[in-house]
Image (cartoon, rainbow, N blue to C red):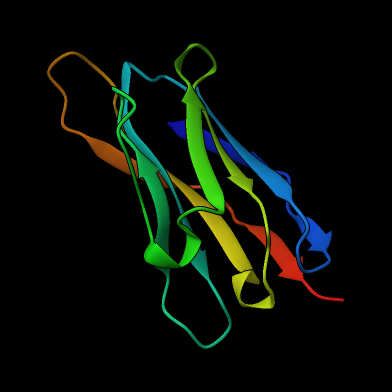
Length: 121
């Protein structure tokens, strides 16, 4: 099994910054896409940003220019640097990782437990 451990959430004032981390561990053979999603109360879970194993990134229009996703393949860790935070960024942030457990096994996906980000004065 794969475990995802997230950290870095918290309370921050508008305009502030936070850095989220998500470390994957377990019997992982290869990791493919890694990403961050968020879900605000009463809303659907939405993609924030995604990064492929080769470093290509994709992000939601609402966070372009403010959030940066990166990964450290040696540490099986994905990061989300969030700058110029706005109250509308308040949500539970989940990391998502695609991986295989063996050379010929199917890709699987796992979710982190979620870390709360609250942007408020």
